[in-house]
Image (cartoon, rainbow, N blue to C red; front, side):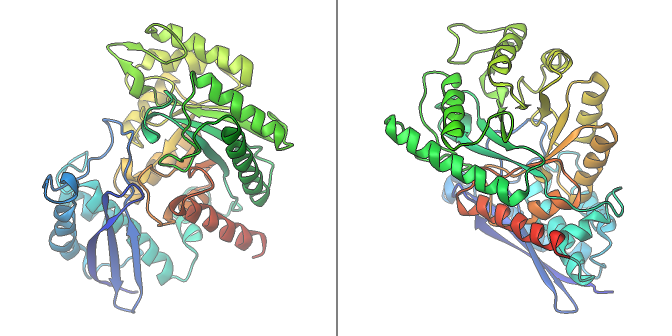
Length: 418
């Protein structure tokens, strides 16, 4: 088998104009594979940590030359000579070299791009599409490949769009029976209709970090009204062709045990916020609700997940793709679905372990990008390979988002016409 001869790290820019890391793995048979690490904006305290330079003379302190040095001088020598198809062994070496649970020594921005690049190199070595190669690391066996249902973030709020809205993402979720090409067409149609409607109302059509529009509304409910009207104008049926979802990211408006959103004139308790969600659900039949409470407000999660049988209650900041956090959530019956983001944990194999635990517990699996993305489309292959139920790659615009949607188009063609 092929052997790794070199790993090179380099500092590149992500979609927000901040540095991140790309790693390239070189094999002795001439194969090379590169991968880059995304970066979050709304970040859980339970996520793996990045290493940054804190040198104010470079990129306002956000430079990542330390991470480059970690790759080139500390991690690369440890895996030279290893077979790239031995992913578990290589990831273990990377983890041992870091030696911390949260990757705070060498940084997830050093470790993850190597892990992903090795996975890509392994796939190339055995001449398999990346998604098919990843499938071998799951419990799915010979189950047929499918394109996960995409959740399109068409209105951005929270930290993704200057905090103009409290809720971070307003999502279009196509019916799971809809073919991927049709789902993409529908999302683009509604997105363009929404743009026209915003212009007609004199609202901003500038886009946020994830490609969705970032208008200023008086309430969060106003965004749902606008989205519902745009669906109807596009000649699609809400709750039939397409469903509405929210990524609330409640950490961002949770302080001192209470919550405050512009829809209400006072701070709310956990129980009062549950009532708000119940009201929105009664009006809009929300199919998907992500991070409705703070990452430590277990009471709210348990209450909502047990009273809301028609909505998937999804944990992102709550879980942070962390195995122990997931086990706690399963035991408490706090969620019906889980967000999967490799850079929240650090290596591909650690991510796969969380996926398998979630699948075993019967949870919906949602593979997600980050707000600070690159043009790397690894996450699209990963979602198909693990048999995810849903993906979240942002709006159907901006190059770093479209790269993922276009890769899904390519995969869709391959699996439909083997």
